[in-house]
Image (cartoon, rainbow, N blue to C red; front, side, top):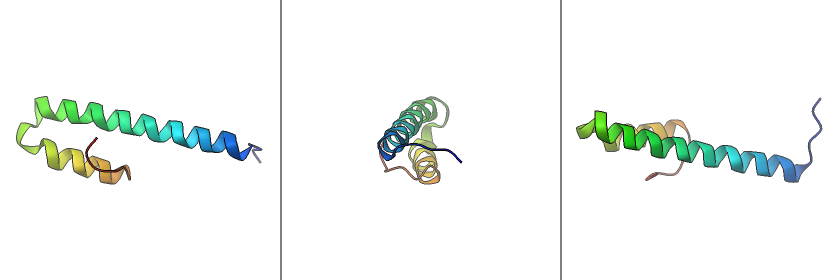
Length: 56
């Protein structure tokens, strides 16, 4: 069992979501350099896989 106050859990989850959004933005920048024609679909697919809003 792990005891964790709800406020700490919310903060940790928000931090994790921000990290995923930052990762998606870095992946989009990488895709722009390496997958030029496929940047938008590749980034959108990664965003969906991470369950993040579109347009990083």
